[in-house]
Image 1: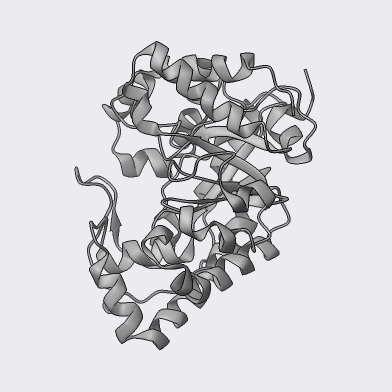
Image 2: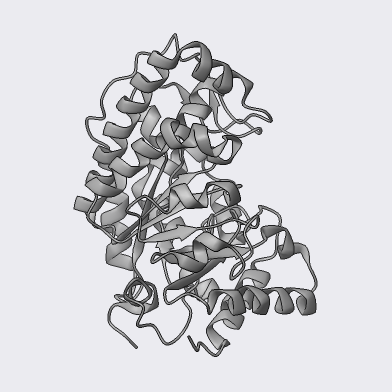
Length: 334
């Protein structure tokens, strides 16, 4: 077995087997996670290093995946910048104050995040890298403006067009601190990072090009680690995403691997993109769909298998184990 492992080999295009990991793999679908959740609040799980490290490592042996991803929330950073974020609402994270009521400040330190990373690195096998992550400045700002999740992001769109100067000021502030957050994670020991742009797909390409792209570009230029850029509903944005210095583009199910002009021509690696709804499918259907994604992935010199979005909370962990086994068994010929 390689000392660096399949995932890091994929960044160099020298892996002989396809690496696989899953967004939200350290989550609610795991029985062990549910057992912990019965004893502790989500806030305690995020902020207690020993608990968060344990949860981060849970999927490695159970699923046979090729990377761990830090167990944290996309709103960890803005909470550390002064936002009042409540994690234990049944509807998901809730931000109790409007952006006008919040006094955002620069990130100072997050000792518990550093400790989680250090503990995870001590516990992981040498060939399993730890992926750090953060939300993109735009996606984080959407959550701050909407005060949680939203169906149409109307407050965000209104803010962009009615308060353009304030919008760009906040994007500058969030970008600077996202870089600080990644630098903290890097110093603590992450080996790869993924930037999540969950809400970028609500924008037109022309808007994305000046509202989002300059800011995410600064992040990928600033952090010297293997990197992945994920955007949900990204089909129309790929030509612009390709302009960043991310090493990999992680694509959702709106993209068909092997049938999109940008990803056929890009020199970047591609990650993705089994539709996460297929986690409810029967085994034969799932097996066919996995193979279809892998055949599309073969067209790329550098490729990592993942889902279109995060693992859904009520799926069977055995389905994910099945996927990992199928991916590893696939004859990888490029």
